[in-house]
Length: 391
Image 1: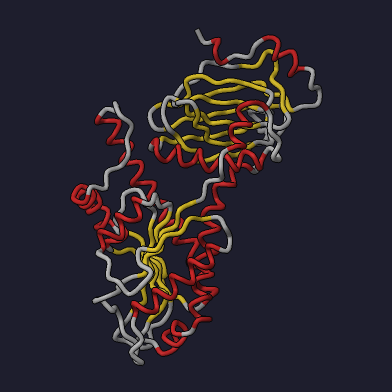
Image 2: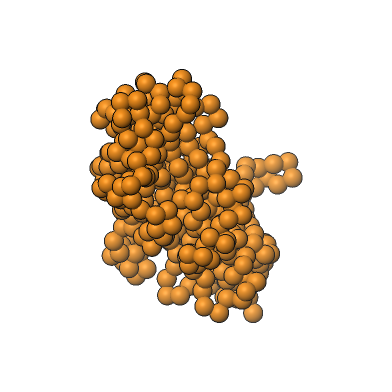
């Protein structure tokens, strides 16, 4: 019954012949509900790359292992959790999935008193099918880079023929048109400062060639808040950045601030999403119970990723100019309400502060802020590459 995930005898013989390869003596897959754990136990540390694959209607987690073999007597019990079967090949092990997951953690554990073996532990958590497919598209390039660009077999020939996938960044210059926003002492208007900063950020991001970039406005036009979020979702945004400039009665207050959604805003997500038709993609035939779980996971993931980006962004902004105390704050801003797009609102400085206003009025000052945001975006998306590294 479970022979579909065991090795063929001929393959075992060929793998045994690799006398100096790291030998795996156990493949164990455990779990239930949202969480699944894969454990590979071996006589040495396993160099590895981990990738999401989506092809011919099947989703898999591929663990590529450059130098390994499987012990003929390896312990290979039937898999559980999200894994229905697995297949071993000279390239590594592909774990076929019953539902979409992402890798929440992957680490190598060295020998212990109770277990003298090395173990590679991979934790999987359930995500929406749409999130998995987006990860899989990004992993095409990551997997090719891990294998050194070498094409091995028909599967790789298909992967190599596909164009690279770029992350989608939506930049939202606040205010505009009839809404000037805050005013500086010299009558500089927030709507003008943030548009120029947004255009500078677009230029900085385009220089890398990594991203597809959209602006919610690129001239002096007012765009309704709900339309800004709808644009981001329609464009398939991987990150939404709303740029503003602040004002305060105390003119000594200066520095940048980064906002993510607070708990009150989280309570608004569902009713606002229903009002404006921001429905999350769920596969046809999914039960209401499972659809509800997937929706909750997506919203939780969006909140987490927004906070992660904010924490990456703050030190970069600090390198470009002053930041306020407690610079990562939470608020109930409408433009942060998308259920499936990580989002931040950045106040790049205070127009009511003389030094901040002068910095933001200068092309050099705006460019420093834009480049700081661009560096944070690069660092945020570079996190996914960590799965190809040996921990």
